[in-house]
Figure 1 (tube, helix red, strand yellow):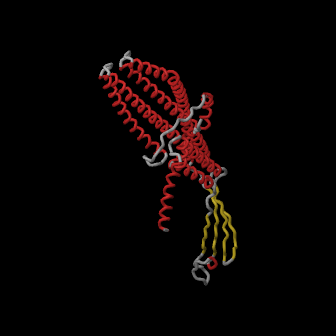
Figure 2 (cartoon, rainbow, N blue to C red; figure 1 turned 180 degrees about the vertical axis):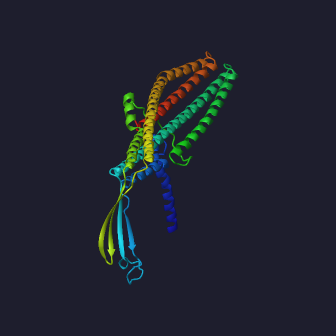
Figure 3 (spheres, rainbow, N blue to C red; figure 1 turned 120 degrees about the horizontal axis):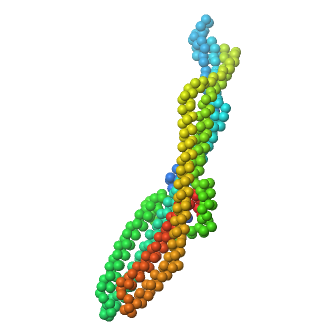
Length: 422
């Protein structure tokens, strides 16, 4: 009886597991879930965060003084001139000198070293943001393409069903002596062509499925839901070029990294100029005789910066590196402003194209098809005209999907340039 009850409880719990799992939405139905998952699980993004943390830990040591040095010298360990033998005990030798030394860099050098490390932290922080914007942009683009392929497959299947209906109409007319057998054959040829297109679309969806899972750091064939909808496009007021240009200049991750590199180069240059000045080593040295301290000595040691030719070469090197950083930022800014202008134009064109198709071209194509279908059934229009009308509807819907895809790709690129979502 106890065994039967245990089996029953185990089976009941197993029955509950899939029921609870079914309540959870499958990943992939919306873009937000994909981005949240990638933020938590993508290893490349995690690596950049660890690198940023490592850079942060280098700031404090950069400005710290080097460790002090303690030197112990045993003087006259053979005890010459006395009746004592050789000894290594501080109290049993002629004298013991303890020297405590601390190296001290030139004034302001430690602050410059800290500022260089802080600039490097800013670079790694910018790299974290840049990695995320690039990753999120790729996910947005692949998701949009996945939606496009899914929509294209749906349209092709609907068209295939429609062609099946047209085949029945053509067969009915042929059986009644009102149509030609060629019409039936043409519908079958069209269906074969659509079936071939479906195979291509399924193959492309398979590739896009694996690509999206790769970006999420999941197995290539892990299950993904079909994309339900695309993101809402920003309103026209959010796409003012002057405003977006200011945002790009202020927030673009690559430009922030470039600014940090320039800052690091400036501090490195200032640090190189401090090499013209000596570094110091300060020390204090008490001397023990027997068991007591008899004398105290002070010492100062400093380097002599004689190799000025080498230092001038170092200074010219950092000056050149600073100029190179500034030039690279200027080139990067010009390219990004051009990319922003191009993407904004592409987004507006795609938006207007989609609106034109939805409000004019598609309704016109549907009216043309209905008119051709009625005319064919009444024997007033040939079958070729009907097929052309049907193809116009499919073409218009595919163009509409393509315009939506183009708008989403342009939006993802704009957000990548800005470093934030609109």
